[in-house]
Image (cartoon, rainbow, N blue to C red):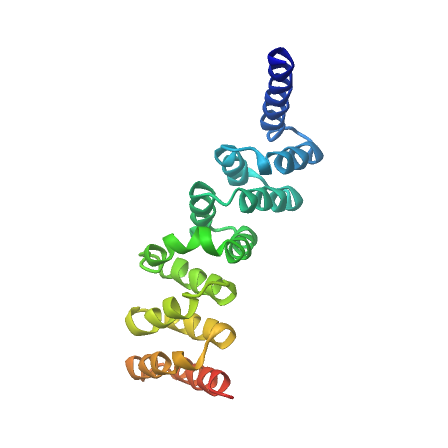
Length: 200
C-alpha cells in the first residue's frame, strides 16, 4: 500500500512540476492550461504572480487571476494589489474585479491600502469597495470621506457609496461636502449620493 501511495504522490508531483514549467511555454494554450491546473496547488501563488507580471495574452491573464482568486491567500491578495499602482490599465481593471470577489482575504489589508501614499491607488481601492460584499465596506468608505486629504479620492468614495451606501453614510457625505466646499463636482456628487441612499 505504501508503494502505491508513493507512486501516486510521485505522479502528482510530476504533474505539478510540468504545470509550473508550462507557465513559461511559448504557446498560449499551454500557459492557460498550466495556470488553470495550478489553481488548487498549494504554494503556487508565487509562480502564478511571477507569470502575471510578464503575461501579455488576455485569456492567459484572466486564467492566472482566476487561479489566484481560488488560492485566496495573503500572498495572492498582496501580489494582486501590487498591480493597482501599475501602468497597465487592462490589468489594473482585472485586478479590481478580482479583489472585489475576495472580501475576507482582502479585508485585513484595507486599512493599510487606504493609507497608501499614491492617491491613484487609494482611488482604485475605493472602486474595489464599491463592489466588495463585506460588512465594513461602508465604514471604510466613510472613513475616507472624513480623513482623506485628496478630493479625487473622496470623489471616488462618494461614487462607491452611490452603489454600496446606506442611510448611515449620510453624515460622512455631508462632512466631505464641508471639507471640500470649493470642489463643486464633489459636492454635487455627494448631494446625488445622499438623495439616492436616503431614499426609503
